Amino acid sequence: MAERRQPVPSWHHAPVTTVAIIGRGRGAALHAETIRMTRGVELVGVSGRAPGPAGALSEALGVPERPRRELIAAAEAVIVAVPPRAVSEVLSEIPVQQPTLVESPVGAVDLDPAARNALDRPRSMVAVNLLHAPIVRRGLRAITELGDVHHLVLRARTPSAADRVADVGAGVLLDPMAQLLPVLLAAAGEPLTAVSARVDRDHRGHDVAARLELRLADDRTVLADLAWADSTAHADVEAASAQGVVALT
Image 1 (cartoon, rainbow, N blue to C red):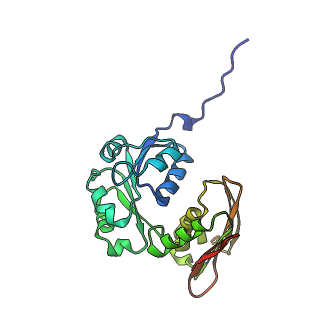
Image 2 (tube, helix red, strand yellow; image 1 turned 90 degrees about the vertical axis):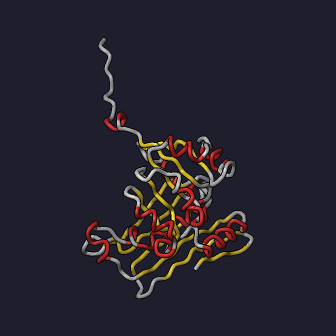
Image 3 (cartoon, one colour; image 1 turned 90 degrees about the horizontal axis):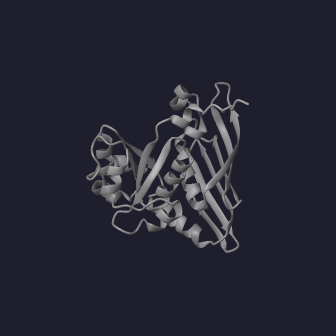
């Protein structure tokens, strides 16, 4: 009897992009989880700002912790997820032509010379988020101190951004309010395993409202309720446990 072989999917032979992460905090962990779930991308290691401090993240991810210069040389692309004050030091060690993503808090592109320098590099970009914002860091610490959080919700309302996203036919999930989603996941403190969504669209096909249910590895579900609804923007992340309630507004 002739042996039948199943065809190998074309993606199986696709080239793999190797990525290094410089950093050890929540932003670094979120990027690492994304890389692990992305086909054709391999995380080759992590490094802290100095020898040693990335150990916990390295162990959790099952990837080596390597000296920073060695790690940069071993990767095709680098994610810089360190506090803003350390960005310049790390960028000085990355070749100008090496693809680089620099994590930066909202506003740093305007205020922080290191973030502006990242934009001047030909193959670099800045990911503007809130994870390093002082008020968010304090709020995340307070949520951690709550212990076993059984209720975690992000609610955000903002004026319509339809004119700004018209070219891509998207809506609230590409609106600036979506920058709050990493804050929600950081507050959850567990890897994401599944997502379900209910989306409302207008006549142009824009997502004007979305309710996301995010399933975590420990079987908890956290919610994100986003909408274009009000004339002024406002948002809050609310967490509750048997110990109390924390709200970031």
